[in-house]
Length: 185
Image (tube, rainbow, N blue to C red; front, side):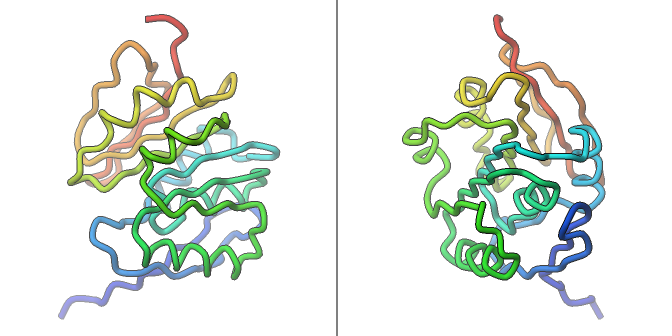
């Protein structure tokens, strides 16, 4: 008999370390695994004090909540699915994450309206929708100096001359990349 899905995510570091929070069953929603988040935040230096982050396709909120737990000054979460957004809102309240802004809507539409710049942008769209090629070209102009973009995918990615793959890894079927913008191609 198969073990039932727990639909809970654990924060792995920072002020909320070991806190669990629920997320709904939504097609395509798969929280970034603990091991991948731990690797990513090791690469980024663990401490997110004062950083402003954007979590596109927030889903469970694992990346955004992890950044907040590690001291991010603000995280903007963008999520289209109403059930996932409702759970995010409840988890923001549960964690007392007043410095988290939830935007319910389409990621591309949000990027077209939002003019802020970010220290870190987390991009983990539903794999089946193949959204990365449409999202990545506009992100380099949205980064603060020294900012980075995290990308997660189920297949190898080519990023073109606009991006330098600073670090990358694989955990099971998940491929993940930490990108830096290149000033000139």
